[in-house]
Structures are given as structure tokens and as C-alpha cells.
Image 1: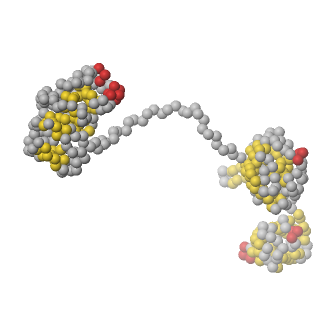
Image 2: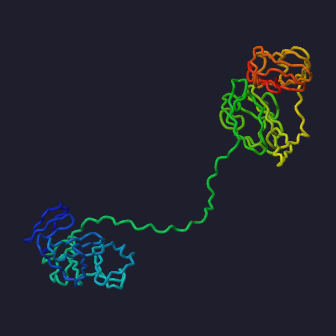
Amino acid sequence: MPINFPDSPSINDEYSAEGRTWTWDGTAWLANETSVSIVSAASPITFIGNQIAIDQNALVIDGGTSAAPQSSINLRRSTAAQWVADSSILASGEPGFESDTNKLKLGDGVSTWTALSYSSGGGGVEISSTAPTDTEATPLWWDTDEGKLYIFYDNFWVQAVVGTVGPEGPAGEIGPAGPIGPDSIVPGPEGASGGITYTITNSGASAYNINGADNPTLSVIRGHRYILNVNASGHPFWIQTVSGAYSSGDVYSGGVTNGAAEAGTIIWEVPFDAPDNLYYACQYHSSMAGLIIVSDLGPTGVVAATHPVTYDAGTQTVGIDLSDYTPKTSTVSSKTAAYTLVLGDKASLITATGTFTITIPGATFSTGDKVDFMNIGTGTITFLGSGVTINSVDDALSIDTRWAAASLFFISSSSAVLVGKLA
């Protein structure tokens, strides 16, 4: 008769029936005996170790702790739809169970599932509400009343117990990288447009403050993009074609987006036909206005003088051709008697004839100022500081040779350095 083991047992729980006792080891009911008999290998049962598995779940029968060989049955199971989709072929005598219809088929080693007939008894499996009597020919019984599978084992019908799913196997090796796909033909999102930025605020109602300067002259280039960030509430910023106060009839809108903003961003893409001069103005305050110079190129920088340079390898000297050099013209002032410098002598040349003293006053010149001197006579020119410390090599403060020259550099309003042919 069938043995119905308890559901959800705990480890080491015991169950007795028909004069025998079994113990649950966590995965199977183990008979408390020292020997077991093995179902004939000629039946359609596959024995593997000491377990019986259905659809990869361990279906366990264990006969005890003796060294006698143990057995396992692998019974494949899937839904009817899964069997139809499966192209594999059952081995000869291998059972396959439809879990949603409680039907069974036996493989022939050749046919696919759809080509096999359902088993209605015999061939090793009995599907009915009554246990088969010929247990040698039919060692498996599917009880259709209870929906359970039994195995005739050691003269008893033993319920097949589905054990827990085993641990997941190790991951397989990572396959080789696939080929690089073709370049995308879908363009990416457009980035933000760039431009030259002006930050515009207001100094009260008297001026626009643009990048730190009040009402400055702006220079823009045709074809370029300008971003005017305006934060001057109550002072709408207009671009127009006339100077002075705001004139509604002379507003310039070429390339301008969001013109007249007082708290926002004006975008100006200067057209190539923009006039040379435009103007900005506040709608309400005439003192807030300025000039905009429009050109095709930026402001022209200072052109540096160029002079041919030569090198004489024999003498290892460098020569510079200054034939086209025109020196900056300095004011020349001639002195023949004692003299005290004034601010107007800055950046000038003082020539001296005779013997006398030139006084350098304090608090007159600034850092960076310079005065040049030249002795064009045969006398001696002496320099005297009055409120100014005059520094020189060896404290020499005179020019006593004709055609000798010296320069006085101010390093502060009260200190200067005298360099040249001094005595």
C-alpha cells in the first residue's frame, strides 16, 4: 500500500508505517535499515547515485547507512506547451510527464514529443486511481486521485518526495566580444550655442555697467554671436541706429532675439550688413547710453617695429639694422646755470654747458618717471637731492666729461637711481 510521508518535515524527524521507520535528513526520508534492494535496472528507471530527480528537482529514496548501492530516478516534466516547443528526443524507455495534464509519455529514442503517444498503463508506469498489482512490470504508479507519484521500493509503494533545488552552478566563461557595430547614423543632440558674453547691470539710473565699466564703447564683429545677460530691472536695453536717448522709430533688430530685455538674455547674431555704428540706450533714462562699433575684424593691435638681425660667427656678435628706426622725439632743454627740476622735465633731455648743480625736488615725480641729461660743455654737472634720495654706483653724482650722458629713474616720489657715465 502507498506510504504518505508528512509534508514539510524537519531534519531528524522520524516516520513509521507498515512496521518500518524512516528519518528525514533534510532532503530525503532514509530507511533506518542496513541494507536495501535496488529496483531492476531493466525497468525504465535511470539510477544515479542515491537520488531520484524529477525535472531537475531531487526525488530521493535512500536505504540507510550501509555500503549497499543506492538509486535515483530522473523523471523529466514540463507543461504540454513546453513539451511541444521542446525539440529534444526522449531516450528509449525514458518517461516524460506533462505537469498540467497529469499525462505521461515514454520515449523511443527516435520520435519527438508530438509524435509519441500518451501512456495509459504498462510499459513500467501505471496511471490510475488504483495501485498496479504487477509491480515488477510496473514499478511506477501515478495516483490520479491524489496527483502523486509512487515507486515500488522494497515491497512498498513509496511516495516520491521532491527535494529542494540544488545550488546554482558556477557561471560559464565569458564568450568572445562581438564585432563592433556600424557607426550610428542618428545625430546626437545639438550642444548649446556659444558666443561672446556681456554682463549688463545698472549704476542707478545714470549708466549701464557692462563688464565692470559704465556706458563703455562696445566692439562687435559681423557674423559673430553675442550673449547679453541683462540684470537691470526697470531699464530695458535697446539697440538702435541713432545716438542719445531711446528712439522707438530707430530700433535696430537685425539678428536680435529678446531685444529690450531688462532682466533676461538678449542674443545678438550680428548680420554681415550691420552698419558700422550702432548704439545702445535705456528706454527710460537718456544718460544710460553708449556707442557700439561694428567691424568685419576685431580692433587692430599695435604693430611692432621689425629690424633685420645679423650674426657674425667670427666675432660672435649680433647686429641689428636700425637704418629705418625713428626714435621717439623728446623735449630738449638747455641749461647753463643752477637749476631745479620741475614736473614738465619728465621724459625730456636736459643739456648742460658750464659748471653748476641740478637739484632734484621731492614730491614732484612719480614712480616710473625718467629725465635724461647730457654734458655738452667742458664743465662739471652735479646732482643734488632735495627731498629725494639719489642712488648711484659708488655714490657718483656728477658728469664731468664732455658728451657724457646720464639718466635719472624715479622708483618712487622720494627715491631715484642715476645711471650713466658718472664721476
